[in-house]
Image (spheres, helix red, strand yellow):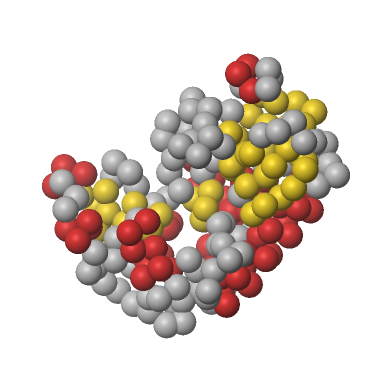
Amino acid sequence: MPFVLAGCWPNASIEEVKNADTIVTKEGGTIRLIGVDVPKLDSPISQEVRFAKDAFRLTRKMTEKKEISFRTDDQLKNEKGEFLMYVNTKDGRSVNSELLRQGLAWHIHSPPNKKFDRDFIKAQKSAMSNRKGLWQEWKTRPDTYRASSKDKRFHHPSCLNGWSVPAKNLKTFQTRWDGFWEGYAPGDCCRYKLMWLGDPPVAIR
């Protein structure tokens, strides 16, 4: 894949959209979209599957049988060997941003790949303000959610990892909504508690 190392990978053809944030190319690479996390198609939770299907359809609509381009950031691959990319359509639209703008994904801080973090947070705030997608049914009650300013993850009040955040990195939010609004994402350790098993009815993972 000679183009990837130069920062762009033009003229790639899509073999398969595996998930809203994961694309396989005919050139032999698996692409993972930078800066977004999406609901999972294989989730046992029906609400999540519903939004996962919407996100999946959006990525397919924007990429399959379309001329698209890929752009890298500082880190080329993740631990799975997937290429970390920003995906753009021929007319310049960002698939990463559009998933956030339609409320079908949430921003996840992914250093050192943070070139478009501000744009992604802006797109997410737009979806939240307009109650699109995942945000349309969002309800929450105040609590104390401990977060780390280093990795930009926030935790369920009962999560021990939240209580182990060093004081110099500690940030707190009164609601989960506040955490998302600031561009933070749930910690992997308590993702389901915060998203699908939190205050009923919860409409995001």
